[in-house]
Length: 520
Image 1: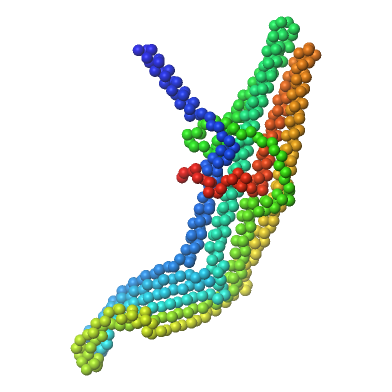
Image 2 (image 1 turned 180 degrees about the vertical axis):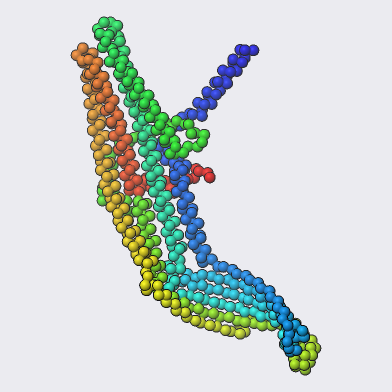
């Protein structure tokens, strides 16, 4: 029974270790894979993706200004008053009044407003000597109000819409800039991981050289050709390089974790170790500084966003200038009334007799028919001039708009100068890092030859462990420096693309791909 329990216990341990190993696992990724993961899943990019959506909502909200508005109203009133004359009523005068109105109002692009209204009423009273009771009335009205100075014009009336569209474009440029920054961060983290992995390999090669020398020295001590104390330096160097490997392994894990967070792997792969499959390239890239500057002016999203912001300031300035004008409003109205009701028939067609002999009922349709047929045409035109004195004594809004547009123009110029400096630095870095790779490659080749020569001298008894170990360390440093220079060259190429604003184009990344892997 105990054997079964023991077997079951070990089986559970094996299953647990297997599942743990499967959860950690490894994942081989190219630089392109990492960039696509980041574009679709990076949380910083996801935040920027929402801004254009918010701007779309702002555009819809601004355009609501030109959506028609409907108004319906109803009123019912009944009054009872004492009658002081036999002509009015017997004892009290009672009147009931019902009123209905429907109105459609529409703002027009020139800054005015157009409306169509239809109102209908019914008046029923117990007054004597009336010819119609109840009375139905209807009026169809057309009204146009148009500013001619202040608040006149397409740009003034559509100011909020124009600003909303421009802000939508700015949010797209900000998203593009966030993508450029994120892609560069991915490349930096990826090549940092590659560098740490290669550095680990360099340290392993260095450890192997130290161990080989230690084995050689141990054999020589055994056969008596080397004093035992001479082996101590080799043992110390092996221990030191083993410590270097521990540090290099930790750096690999840290670099892998940083890249994993940036590309935001799914929850099930949070502990996955990323294995980079790409190696840094070394191809010379010729860059013309003037052409690079022109490319940056056309493609850099931060410059594009500032140009659009400058357009917004121009719109604000035009609006502020318009608000300095006096108000001159044109109002034109056209209305057609109609009336009908129940006709009261008197004896001898004389209402003064008070002798009602019958009625001729007519509903509200007669009043509506007269109104829609424009039986009674009425019109009115008016001009209203309003001159607020504050526009003569205070022009703060206009002055503020002028200062804002100057500030935006200076900010754009400053950013263009900064872009020029960044391009100069990026072009210089590409050229410098390319030359550094050549220089460090030569240094590494020389370090290899020096080590080979020193090992030959050691085998011939003409050198010591100290010099061999020193040249091994020199070779390790040379290999590390060469690798660092090669990584720096690839990063300088990425930084150049980022500075020119052409990273997305070179990587064939579309805005439609952004954030598609995220769920909210």
